[in-house]
Amino acid sequence: MKKFAYVAKDTSGKTIKGTLEAETANDVLDRIHEQGWYCVSYTEALGGGFGKKGFHKFKAKEMSYCCRQLAAMMTSGLTIVKALDILYKQEEKKGPQEAWQGVYEDVNKGSTFTEALRAREGCFPDFFISMVDAGETAGTLDVTMQRLSDYYDNTNKLNNKVKGAMIYPCVLGVMVVAIVIIMFTFVMPTFAGMMEEEDMPAISKALFAISDFLKSKWYILIGALVIIVIACIYALKVPSVRIKWDRFKIKCPVIGPLIVTIYTGKFAETLSSLYSSGIPMVECLERSSRILNNSYINECFIQVVDEVKQGQSLSSAISKTEIFSGMFCSIIYVGEESGALDEILEKTAAFYNEEADSAVGKLVGLMEPAMIIIMGVAIGLVLAGIFPMLYGGLKDVS
Image 1 (tube, rainbow, N blue to C red):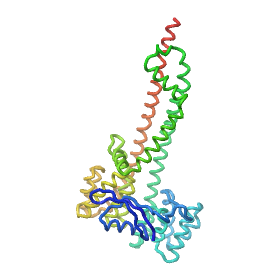
Image 2: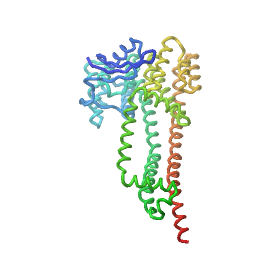
Image 3: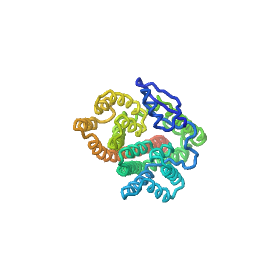
């Protein structure tokens, strides 16, 4: 038996924390659901995979490659045992190789693929394990692997797009900080003797005070920044603070709608993949909302899951959250009415994935002019502080 720590919510939204002893993570989820609660998160409290041989947390890029390989081999007629044998032997990195070797050995001894994956809790994404479980149950594991390959490939492309798009704003941000520091610590002091302090305008006095502070007490500023960063990290671990921050992200003007578009694409694709694999809608909703890693959305989906359990339509329950766009809710409504929700969700996921790519570009595009404005303001302030001194010095000469 393993020991798990969990965080759950009841129907009133109250947070419940505790520990459970269970064989697998799914047993933990089942026992939490039996209480009528919604599982927010869970971790293996004791005896977890971290630090053990064969533990490796797979990323989207690695999952895409592994699923593609397994799908190709199984479509060619190889058994899952033989496919896993080939997969772990051709892995070059030690961590993934040991993880897949452990899965292969368990399956070779008679365990199901799902059981072998669950035995390595934390290595493989929860979504991946759920899909494999559904594929094994339905006897369509090869099709499921192909679907997982497409899913992780799209996820990896979106992650790469975000990382690639962030390079220029990050470089620009570093340049802005460097230019501001250089101007205040090297440029400003050269004009210090051009005018007596009592004759300086207020803005010049303030800027020279900042310059002196940066030159003589820079360590206080760095210390304060470190404290602020650490305080923010720990504050975001507090559930109530994290919920407010996550709500702010999706409700703030301009940036919020772009973030919601990215969330919609990811939610639609995850829900489509899970539902098409035959997983019950309630479980699909719980797992799809957790994929977004937004505590405010998780909080809202407690009510969504509860309403769906009571027989309300999915489109109606989701529209009440006021998170996703009206078009997305209308599309789900059409899918429910036509009885082709899985097909509608698949097409919707493809549409919103393209929209998410566009949203990423727009989101990063907003950062570039913001950086330039900050740099312009900093340079303008320095010039505003220096110009009266230059003007006064020239006046004295004349």
